[in-house]
Amino acid sequence: MNRIALLRKERKLNQKEFGTIIGVAQNTICNWENENREPDHESLKKMADFFDCSIDYLLGYIDQKTPTPVDGSGPRAYGHKLLDEIPLEKIPEALQFLEFIKATSGKE
Image (cartoon, rainbow, N blue to C red):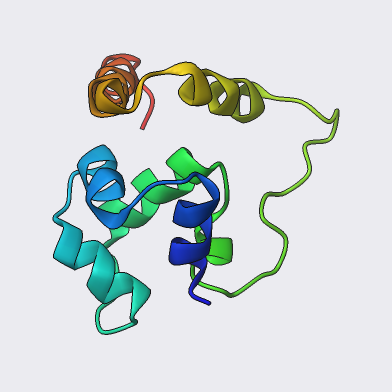
């Protein structure tokens, strides 16, 4: 099974809900999952952040979902827990806020 579909189903999201979260149409998700099209770079980054995994894992290049942090923790693990507590309809707003923070932090 396609990794995007697998991860989406693990989160109990349909294609339309997942599309809303990452800002693409339901048919785009369908095309990715059926391997008719490939996600663009920005969509891959959004999915990797949302699923707390690497882009290489999403694309099937590696089998380990996320690299193991040296100390077994890290901000990604904490962020993942927060996303699980946000209502589904608020996730796009939360992701926009994170993009704003990133853009204004001075880091590239």
